[in-house]
Picture 1 (cartoon, rainbow, N blue to C red):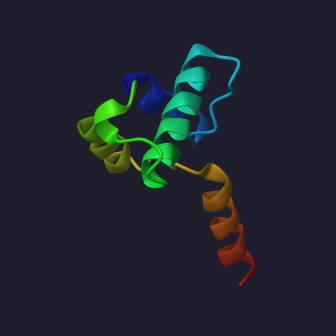
Picture 2 (cartoon, rainbow, N blue to C red):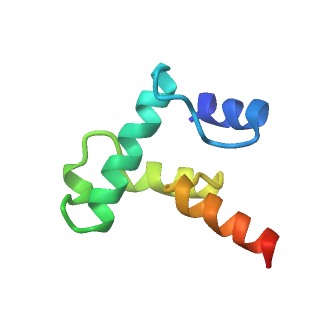
Length: 79
């Protein structure tokens, strides 16, 4: 989590390149979160995510789906 916070501080977002170990981890947690949200995976069965980790990531403003977030930001800029 500290590495993710550091990345955002240096880059301004959570768009971590997948080719890095941090990026691979971010990709994995986003996939698990999507499965949890769509009821395809129970949080108790998740490999990487726990309820506590979800809470911590929400607390730091982590964007679970950066594409939707970027769309919303751009839409607000236009409107």
